[in-house]
Image (spheres, rainbow, N blue to C red):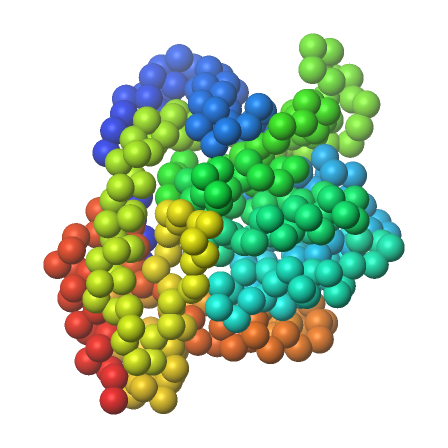
Length: 362
């Protein structure tokens, strides 16, 4: 069985977790502080706030930006649901817009068309490791006085014009869930260059309790804290980040060598401005070149011991969100397949996966 994802634990993970455990500091502790400092420095921002997962990172960022009832936030129609759901949780309204048909990322033209006097923020989701048109989005945000929030859950260590994703907007939100490029099992972080937002988020993540004044609350907050055990894993992963990046790039390049240019297979377009660290190897199939649909391929590959995943269901396809059709998002969502992409995946396993996939072509 070749799984879709597998954690890459090649360093001091066990040592650091045991150290945190033996210290008795298993909730907060020194590894939390260390990870926040080292991760924000690595990505290139002044401040970092760790939280319990990528979804709470988004929610905390939205709260820091003052998003609430009566506001609108522009969200790409094709993404994991967390950005849309967290906007709804704040009481604001997510405005789902279509994506660029080549990059599968939020389309700046659609963003401009959907800005109203209620719009307060844009969430740019960097899907699969690709990075959105940040120059265009930053210009819109500046011109309209909007916050630009980056969802970097799938693109940690990807860069745009030599700057890491997550350091370009007002706030960068990260996930360290089990399948992500670096992992803590769960866990998340928000990076920013704003001291005001940093201070606000530190209070928000801990019940709204004023720092240095225990049990005094100036605002309503949440328990979104990261544990010291999780942070210990993250510190060990960050020590090996360069090796993880190297292996992720090897995996991506091996797939490209095998499949790029194959009829019926379309990869994301990656701009020359982007140096990606691909989280998941994803491509859109044209089923007329295959013996069946995307879902048929997923089922047949699983029978052969290869686990894959579909693309995300766009918000416009799910009745819960009651959204007008987004044709490009829906086309991508129906036809994208994601192949195993973890750093320990060997070249011969990648070759086997590609061979098995090609066996279902007409």
